[in-house]
Length: 316
Image (cartoon, rainbow, N blue to C red; front, side):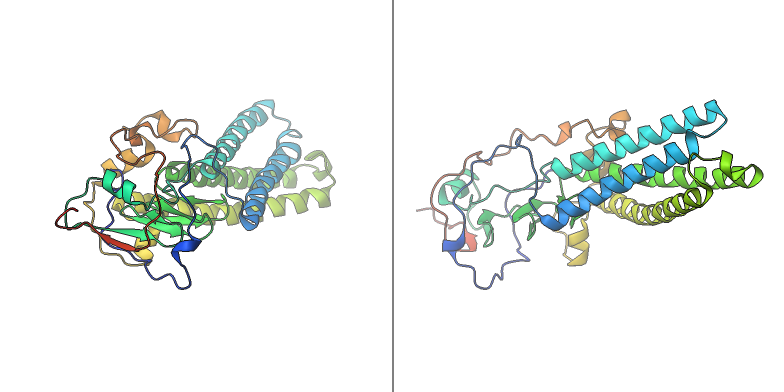
């Protein structure tokens, strides 16, 4: 289920040195805008990720597949590897350029709170860093400079937070990278066996020393990616099934939300009932569209100063 709007606890209320004057005015943002974080470290990490996939692509094609004597072997493995690599990069792009569930900046206004139609006695919290009314299970990301719904963590390798709206793409990215890493390692083993049985000068278009160095580098890269992505994939699936994000586990927050079953949580995260669209980075999370959300697109009014707002029992 989508994170409810009122937030009944705040794990980030202490913000030293921040005053209401530092808050930004209400921002007028539409959800269909391209999302991209201008973080130098994240951009470098994302570029490195793409370059490593391109390196693996070059070694697989020009060292192992093209020189192979078996056309069938080359076509089958080339098609499989390139398809998985394409899906991995597409998933990475979607995870990087999809709004993870950012709360509009500067919506901590009296008009906005009144539009929520909260009951008397309810309490909501304002994030003093981005001046937003924090929905339940939202946390502020210091890199994105926004509060993110169901924020799991900020991943520099995709230069974005992993949150409510892009967790599927992050999971697909780790899964496809795991598969191409495993596939490349299997092909390296077969290629070494083939070269040992045959003349090394005939098993690659490169010289024997260059071939060995490239294959060793590919093995090293494949093993690192295999270990890293298997851990990340397992962690993300566990978080989805337990309906508890990584940051909630890290901060040991007591759940105040009604947890869903593992299967329902999987369907919500991947966009509906089990189908081939679960494995596609090109399908949107249509089941997460909530047209009944009372959040106004353009919050108006002056930002309130209090970080903790209690709805008065006797409305004035």
